[in-house]
Image 1 (cartoon, rainbow, N blue to C red):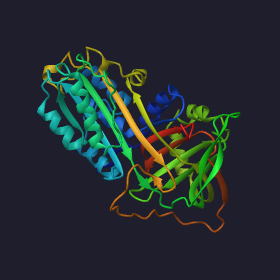
Image 2: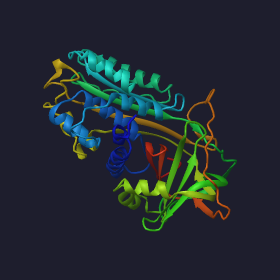
Image 3: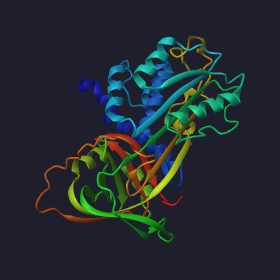
Image 4: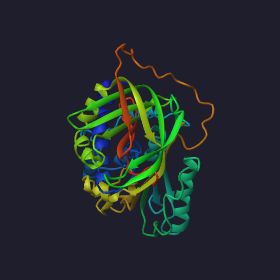
Length: 382
């Protein structure tokens, strides 16, 4: 795969991830967990089915070049590189009303290259059955971990195009936490709660940023080359400030990754588990993606009978994360091949540092530089 084609899915993709997460997190209080990766593929599904202004806006949100046609093979290889079966499960689908006949070429390409589904559903005739069909599809795709993405009555008989995105991640830590202790977590400077804190000491990549005022540590997973990057603000009530400065430029992310070095880290990380679900329409509109929700949307590549009639009426995203002593898992891991996580040469004069994640922080689940999830942990017990 040539680098020129691949560039779209590295630096530009982290730009997209940062602008999407910044917009989402600014409108949500408390815990947030979103797969910018999964939503990216949902938007690509739409981009491939659209033309004119609709297509321009989608490419703009995705930070893709307006002039180049999509490189299907390149995208397929990105999916193959990032998704390890049994560890990262992504379910993306487009469901259109039966009144619109889908273009066979479009349906074929999305299944072949994006591992995504495009289906006709009888929304106008039977919205309740359409709703249960979508929920069942998501549940099956995520081994029952994510269900009920659409609430009763959300799918109406006027519904014409529904986007569903569900993603489920499970993995063990390369080195499991042997000790869990009771500890205090500062929700704010004055409000502290009791939580379960996982503890271990070992060699981890670490970086302290005195300019942006945070510390970061990278905890490797056992399988697939995934890591969790935790970005902890220096001050206990500064996570929102950190989001505002750190997420402003993806250069900050590149700078952080290139400056992390091996330290002997005394590591304390809270146990936490939560589901995050969101309606993406308002966020997308704020990012400049307005046309897809209007009757003027041009989805003529998706359906020739839908030109001027097909618009997005619902856009949902649901995620599940469970971080515990063994790893980030949501189901038993069976028959997994083990890959070694090679730490580069460990210097003799290795520095000792403490990383005590006892107040709200940002976290990223990634593979190399590629961001799969971004999250904010405000309350481990919520």
